[in-house]
Image (cartoon, rainbow, N blue to C red; front, top):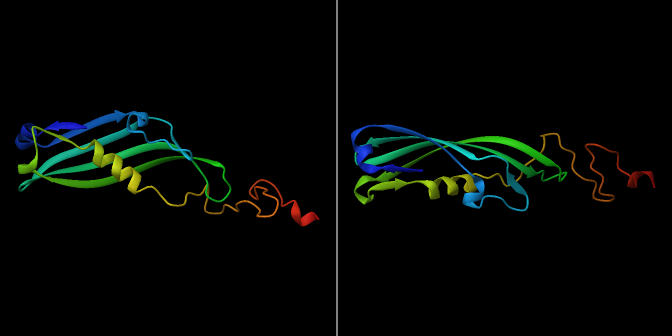
Length: 137
């Protein structure tokens, strides 16, 4: 997402953009982004800084940390970044910062539900959908 610094000096701007997750190399072995990243960002001046107030919406498929089942999530993240206007070139490009925010705000542990029972450590049964097989022995 790139905006002209000269335009920002004259007026507040709101920019919307859809970026393919593949363009930012966002997928990994346990996370797949299903649609484009939808970004809406409001840019405005605050004294000698350009403020970027962004909302990012992602649709991702992720592996549950307890049962290893797939979980689809639509996640909205908000963040605010500021940039010193004197240190900017002709354009302000915030793609790198948006990608970084998405990755930094990624949860360490994702669950399919708060009541996920996980896998049996003995037989490996998914306790959300079947009974433990090692208890029968």
